[in-house]
Length: 423
Image (cartoon, rainbow, N blue to C red; front, side, top):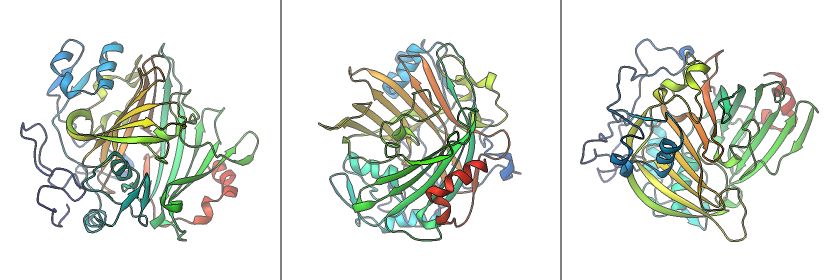
């Protein structure tokens, strides 16, 4: 538990409202979830510490009108368009917290960051640059710079699900290293990352390398891609913004991964405000290896009984495409958790101005590593009736592992083939 002072007494170290909501639906922040369930071992994966909780209520099409004020347009659309879609509402638990040094930095570094347009003027620190954001750009920089672990390797499963319910498994791995965990310090490096596919056969071995930079104090990305069939590495300048992510059948674009990533430059960002809403949270149960495909997959969305929703306060930010810029989504809305600065939901609109796609990002607290992370992401295409789910645990070993320092030499383009062969 964080032992430092809470500035101005009503804010947590990362800038959330520390107090409970006046209606009692959101509890006061008391330091977050900092210990695992009794008897837990890492090889078990992230077990649900709240397995005994039961829903307070379940929202369906029959009682939707009574809850509209607390639901995003995206969740309302899913209830109305997807047969059987429901929202099991659980007691709210403010589990999110960060390592002590991250919390201390969030307080001590306030006032040292400034924006010029969408560019951030300050050396990189994995913390919260704007505890009390005044505009949409500041909120999104909190999303981009939030602490997401030092050296993290993930293995997992994903499933593209067509409108008729047909699906197949995607196996993948990723390795992400923050600048603080590289053996060589490079100017303006935010993080390096590598990831690839283990299944199906058509994608197996394909591997990407990303170097996320803060060049000129604005995030810029260098990327390379290794194609296993050709055994060839090439530059991938389009591995950003609205380039379609492999394996998703066109349902996910590059900057939707992890809620949002990359440069802010193509949009105007408007801070709508902060509001208590029903959001996916503490979604431990859905990702556990014991959950079978038959239990998980339904037409239109996942089995609703495996999900968990709670009341939490979220920052709401609208993104509108700038004149002269291009993107598949001309308008987007993001719902960002006040306790973690993670994107919990996104709504993407078509060029016709209609709600097109709805993304849900279920958050959990990694109780051994002391930071919150996305357990599962579900991207819904309302027009096609299809969806894509990722973030599920690997069936072979724990899905998330932590390491110490990494070699910068392992994150060079000529390393791609070697790492692809090792997976």
